[in-house]
Every structure is written in C-alpha cells, then in structure tokens.
Amino acid sequence: MSSEKEAALRRLDDSPTIFDKIIKKEIPSTVVYEDEKVLAFRDINPQAPTHILIIPKVKDGLTGLAKAEERHIEILGYLLYVAKVVAKQEGLEDGYRVVINDGPSGCQSVYHIHVHLLGGRQMNWPPG
Image (tube, rainbow, N blue to C red):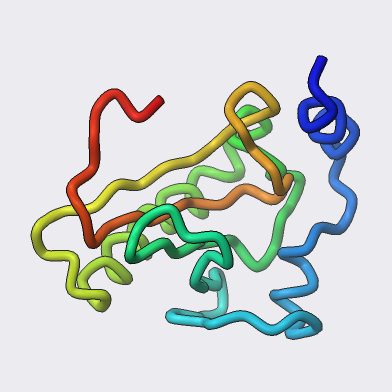
C-alpha cells in the first residue's frame, strides 16, 4: 500500500483538519464566497485556471460522501447550489466541473467533505 493511501486511511476519523483552521481564519486563504453555512476558497494547488473548494463550516461527521446520512441532505444540496453561484461569479458560463473525491481510492486528501469547482479550460473525459 502506498504511503499516501496509508496516511489517508489514518485520517478517516472526525478529527480536526486544515479546513477547520481555514474556517477559523487561523490559516490564510483566498475566500471567494462565504455565508453562515459554507466557505469557498481558491485551492492552493489548482488543477485548472479556476479551482475552488467549497466546504461546510460545520462538519457534523461528514468527513466524506460515504459518511453522509439523511441529516446531511440539506448541506449536500447546498454545497452544489453554492458551486453554481460561485461558478457564475467566476465567469464560468461555458461550463465547469464539480468533483467530490471520497476515500483513499478516490484520492480524498482532507477528511472534511468538500466540493471541487474546476473551470476555465476544456475538461477531458474520462477524468482519470
């Protein structure tokens, strides 16, 4: 097993993540949208000209999509709605990609559910 995958498996619990520090403004980020429920900020390792992460401010056990429960329905839908709002704000009228990586095999690196909003270039399929 790769060391990256082993490290990811150790982080599957609900312990604090770098996103918690970003929410608390303990770590700087380039915020593009914020309200009482979510925070959206530019990814520090962008994979497209526009690469924004959208996260819930309260994790509530939602470390990844596989951990979603019925009580998370509202915030999951809201994350997607905010992705649309931010895409419009960023001028991505020609289209964009929304991604949720889940678990070690899905390349999830931070165990606080988050939506990647990618745009500003032609996306390819399959994504890899």
